[in-house]
Length: 71
Image (tube, rainbow, N blue to C red):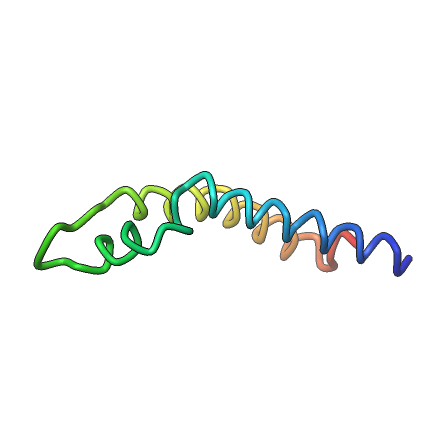
């Protein structure tokens, strides 16, 4: 059982890192431009966060109704 937990943790970490890389969140200039509301604001990361919420909220709701985690 421990092997499965470690494998799922590794898979989740790789998927998270891939999502950060694809969305451009590993670029410090892009993140700083998102945080700079008075200057050159870049709203693209807000769309990335919205997409992440669109995926995670139904998953968390499903686990709450289920009463226990998948693993």
